[in-house]
Length: 475
Image (cartoon, rainbow, N blue to C red):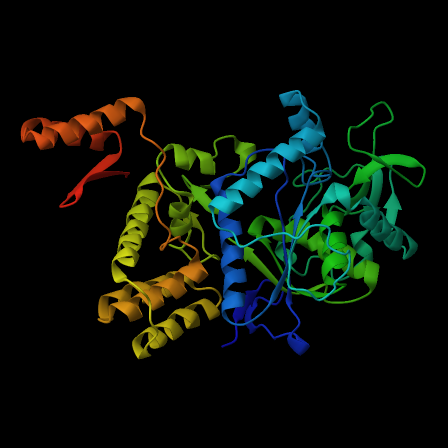
């Protein structure tokens, strides 16, 4: 079975050709700018990209996956103006920019494990496409030479010009500029509306290298052509993507907010530098998570982190299930009620998984498995794939075959359905209440046990009584 995906570049669904000779698919996903905690809206994009990767593997495509860490060069304004986000956070938290990058990179990787993202980077990979199906994490600050080399090529080919604050790409010299976003966006880029012109020749021009202010020594800066400075935000992704995947490769993913600026600029500088087109064959973009009809954004201040969900008693995989309630190209409305419903649905699947016993393939499990795969192969239609699983579990009478289907689905959707649940210890006051509940059951003081059960439930603790005894779990 082959995979069909919606290509933002061509604006249509297209089959993904398998690379010749069994070579891995080249996949580049835009990683985080590590100046703050990521919010759950950010993680919706990473979940969609993880489903893509798992689906590729399910359908027999080996994957070479590159993800960047932006730890320098991402300015506050999209128009290459304002302060570096890393420096801004460093000053606010009274730390070095390097400390900020290290801390927030580690928190991102910790969250990625909690969400079961299938990303296990190798150490010190060669900076070339050696054809191996591995995961590569690349930090912008560790690839300054590659970025300088790409700027050199752009200068040599006449695609840049210099201003007082940096070296800019002249988009007028690249006729295909903006094909990814479309003309409607470009026509809206008028001076004073979306960008500050300064010395720019065109509203869409962007910095490939920024000069450090003469009156300021930055914590993150490098000498280039006799002046101190730092790379523009967009140059890192094209330089590192091409370093590890080649001048052209298969798949590039990100959020829809990357389409009009970041990804459009990546294409322009990459194709101008190499003369090869297309830079990437398939561009995939995930839609926003919205709350109160607005995109969740760190710049707006009121965002929700994965840690916030855990504090309220949700497993990160409950959020992953919630992400599956809408197709990745449709906006998804966040609410605590919807997340609670996702938690309940996932809990029921976990209970089903624990009750089915050992898996064994059969005609029914294979038939339903094909329906599940077909939904994923049709532009990652996870809601339809999940619906097929629920329908199958209601219809398959053979428990072993039902277990086989559910285990295969869990491999692709990563919901932790067959993992034993571990609970963090109860707080002392709740532990004492649970012990009092057990004592009241032993003495047949049912009025007290009912009261204690209710009090525990109000604190989010569910008590379950069985023939073997009473147990508790978090709601």
